[in-house]
Length: 632
Image 1 (cartoon, rainbow, N blue to C red):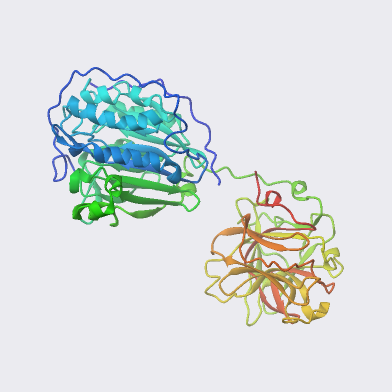
Image 2: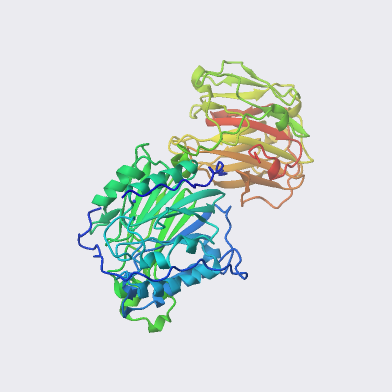
């Protein structure tokens, strides 16, 4: 009969705070179910362990963008009547605990076929091993594979030796336990990692229609939570590692996964060899389908584990496969087979997945767009000039020649468009593109070039107050910048974002190359940031070097001088090559500042090529927490 749906679901979770699963049973590789023993008394929930801390031998960091989920595939040959050995699984669980803090392991999931014959004694022995996790309150899940139960029916099979050992009450004391189906064969878990909530399903080998309805209710109760589906069977793989849905897996896809955009990753065992594929769901998004099973290998797979290392900062999941049991042996005592099985490094066992998490989850958990911040919030004490480029609501419209962009600080350092000879009006356009942490939702699109100089730029008026400022007490210059994808290949080397007109010689500087600009924030031939300036206390140029910038991405750059030393920052991170020699202030010839033009020996050589968002100059060193990209 159809399973009743559990209506006792938890309340809908709040918005996540980020910023930041084939072929049918019976094919080669699928295990056959065997008769088991019923009637073992149910295992009670474990008593609380007063010595348990966060878990394992170390603590996890739920806010760290790097975290790990450990996956344990079929261990059935380790628990096979009077044959087998629990030592490999014991070693795997202890490894997970011992490396929990190192890898920030937030959860562990067994994929079913814990034992071979569904016998009570086998299951009891396996359950004893999992007490290693229980005593440390290590968050984990276990699900029933076809070798763990005594029939091929769906999860309405009723009592079983499996359920006696791994009932929901076993997982209830864990911080991640969310709930189960009434029959107890299916559970879900809520994991806090990378500053957000993740949902992990542990579904039975044969989920009934009622279970599918229950899973959909769980997803509906957590509508903004990304989900991982673990179950025993979804897909099988060919010798090359290409996975395809099994007959049951296709049903699971059609009835649950395809229309549940929250499910982005499915993990199953049951079949060997291992493999993977990517399917497209109804929302047009990727679903990664992974098969993991090593029971056909030496020592029943030696309890190999998969470590899924998530890195939201890099938009990557790095996957590795290893045997802690073999790894823990003295190297000289490993036999030849052990030596080859310590870790697996083939393309289906050690690989990286590129996942743009923000984009992948946007359909159900979009990152809130910060509102435009009021001008007054940007006018910190000592603001010399602040410029926004939000004067037009038409994306792509040209900025008229001579157009004035007001200095919102009220200090009169307004900017005016100037067009280089031979360039047309489209050389400078309004744009709706912007850095996600920018105070405004707009920018300017510069399409400059060199040899000959082409494009348009902005400049202060001849009498603008900031033209004569030396800022010997320190300064902060900030800008939001994006470079086109072809910036490196189309010869825009040494183009300038912000510069002070006048050569070094114009301010009495004779060292180095006196024809260089008095100050310029530029990008090298490799698009590396450079802040080059003639300070008031030096006769030569002082230069800060950054790393090569990626194109096609917005970044925030800040040049911060504390009155003695200058530090270059990108997205709030200090860069390496900052000079230790004191560099005080900015030499000046009393001439204008340029936004989007590089000059040498008083001649403009090229216009900027890229996008420029909000720009601000302050007369002292600002801490990172006060930068314009800080929205906390």
